[in-house]
Amino acid sequence: MLNVNPVEIIETLNMIKDEHLDVRTITMGISLFDCVSDDWRRATDKVYDKITRLAENLVSTGEQIEAEFGIPIVNKRISVTPISLISAPCGHSIEFARALDRAAKTTGVNFLGGYSALEAKGYSNADREFVASIPEALATTDFLCSSVNVATTKAGINMDAVAQMGRVIKETAAATADRGGFGCAKLVVFANAVEDNPFMAGAFHGAGEPECAINVGVSGPGVVKCALERVRGQSFGVVAETVKKTAFKITRVGQMVAEEASRRLGVPFGIVDLSLAPTPARGDSVAHILEEMGLEQCGAHGTTAALALLNDAVKKGGVMASSYVGGLSGAFIPVSEDAGMIAAAENGCLTLEKLEAMTCVCSVGLDMIAVPGDTSAETISGIIADEMAIGVVNTKTTAVRVIPAVGKTVGESVEFGGLLGTAPVMPVNGASCADFIARGGRIPAPIHSLKN
Image 1 (cartoon, rainbow, N blue to C red):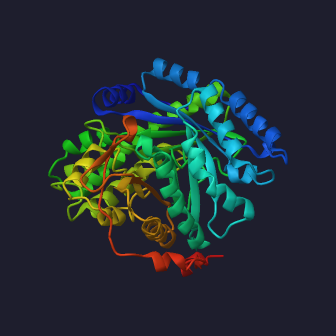
Image 2 (tube, helix red, strand yellow; image 1 turned 30 degrees about the vertical axis):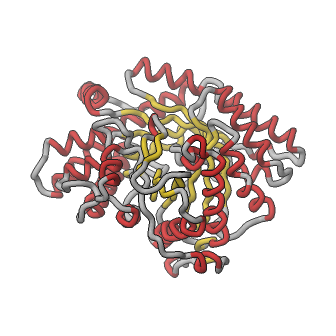
Image 3 (cartoon, rainbow, N blue to C red; image 1 turned 120 degrees about the vertical axis):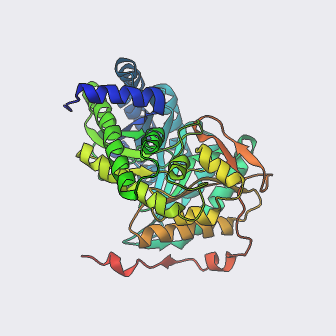
């Protein structure tokens, strides 16, 4: 067990009380490989039964730990084996989506991730059909999240999948237009997706993961912001050291919660994901951390450098606090979920192009970005392709979660509420990339992928 001294306890209580420290999620990963069947009815029954059996006490255990330790645990979630791998022998992907959603409701979790496919090098026949089912799956369920990995550093970029995902995102927005395109908020396109990510909407339980595991995601942008306020005006060396020490303390909280949840549930502890995941609440913003470093507003020149420092220091501090830091771990920049990002986007200081540059050095990618509803599928595919290239060339995870705001244009916004916040509709480049996307095929892997 992790040893925690009284000074750490007092510091943690102060971080919780005054600085918005929380455990963002306890996520139980569940392998579904033993649910495979050539009969979809039998397979979906087995999926539902296994999830509800293993995760029966997940929510209540999280609530008990929260009450006993006084540490807010915002979400309890489930991730499962990518369903495209489980549904392939029998088809009927939509029936799996419904079974997963029923399981989420039965267990009482906030979200269930894993309606996912891995398409970096090409499609199987079953996978192409599966990906086409995503708009209906997200439109007809409440708690289901979906992701598609279309690129890896080893394989390159599957441009056929990139083209299809542009269409899928448009279809999902149309299918959930009555909810502001909410289905797109539950859909992520990845390069180099990781197998142990506890954060939604991109979580799935990878093929290399154990039968079941507990992964915890910790978040504390407010804690880092308050720490930097105490070293205002000092050098970047001091800034980096301050962030490292703060990240260490935050990760210790996650480690403690993860080990306790693992013990009580009888499930192996997987990883702690230390990601500075913001919320729309005042004082819980990654953008405000960057501004505390000396930027007038997030998006100003110097923003990418500030974010690079932050992300690196977070990782260095976290890895000293736990032997099993994993997932994405770093700083997230979801526009709609961060009060500072929202303000910067609304006044034009933060643009889509600047966000793309920032993704070169942060944990994920273009996240929770609303674009005009009339943005073409090809343009969305172009946005995806650019972001996948950043991930592939830099050997890092990148992602796109973009929301075509049906019936809305630049200057308007989409309201999701809760942790998902408000997304100001951002302008996109009007020049067409349709002929580029229409080429299809695969962009080859970069030369540095040849490391064997």
